[in-house]
Length: 524
Ligand SMILES: [Ca+2]
Ligand SMILES: [Ca+2]
Image (cartoon, rainbow, N blue to C red):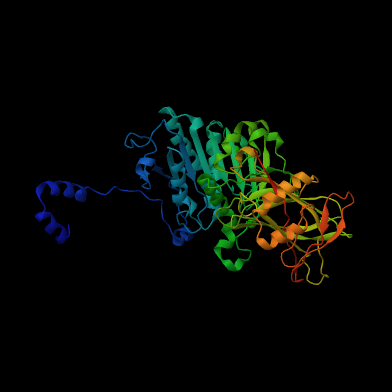
């Protein structure tokens, strides 16, 4: 004990000393940590050791190494609570997974449960990936024996959830198969592809390994698995490459693991539930981006399944549908979820136009952007071009929409997209729209309605725009902020008076600022 402390204690009244000394002398709670190895271990190679670390709400961030056969020494393990196992994958450099603490804490924040971290770092850390693969069966036998012990003591297999990352996904599959598929759930985060591709279901994860198997694919072109393995398989951003991840090898190690590891970070966001990612069943990512798969009627009022932890709410309907492949787009960093709109654009240019669109929603001082550039889009006179517009954030109260059109080719002559109508429909099911506007439509050909809408909109518009709008109160459209537009043409039906769109700069991007006096239809 330091001399200063002894000095203070000797001068404290006895009663205070009793309290003070008790806390000071109380041995600090011993926390057990995940095995920390280094590249040296991987070079030599490590032989398998499976350690089980228990985390519960009562012990917070402090892990407890538990016996594989006897739980009597760990009163914090509550058999009546659900138990979630976290099973990591291959560890090239032997370091502990950086996301482990976060995953454990977010799970405990969500629900009172027992979290068991399956630490098989001795066995996973090896320069030779094949050696780590060889250990997967044994890790699974180990976890199986532990779960059987829990079952003997009264735990319900349905309340067991395995979260497996990469090789850990197949370990979860083997464990589930050992227990005849009776465990509640397996969540597989980018299941490992190498050495598992083309294998039979008994030699890899498959839907029969648990009552419910949800799988996310983020790096199927390198470290992950391409084919569906669960009841629901999410292909984030198509499942191969992730936004925000390095595209060249010059970024070092993260070039190899960023896409693969993204699966975990997406899942973390979903447990955190700050926002949700809606996912859409589709036969290909291309069709999804083309806006061909945005209907969710087969899921009824619940809408299309959301990504991640809470997809369990879709369990029954997904089990009926056998295997479902879904797609979604994400941001390059957290929060990863995007807000999806079905968008259609009708133009009145004489010739067919090809190009890319950037759409912005403005409201409440914020701005959300959707870049639709997966391919050069085709726009044809008086024909609706339907698109998916995924915005980087959610703007609840849309006051203004602006659109940029680019041919994507600097050598091409300048082009203007003459927009007749643009329509955006928020794809969130009605009950999930907290507030605000669900649809933004051009004004209807109903004068009374137009007037009401215009009046509503005057409240939002800056004074300059307001003056411009006043020129066309009955037509219901006003355009352009930088240069004033004049009416040039009517559509064939004569329903929508159109002004010539303005273009800014005439540089690479041909800006069309559509500050329509649109109205937004509020959901009741
Ligand atoms: Ca299997
Ligand atoms: Ca990749």
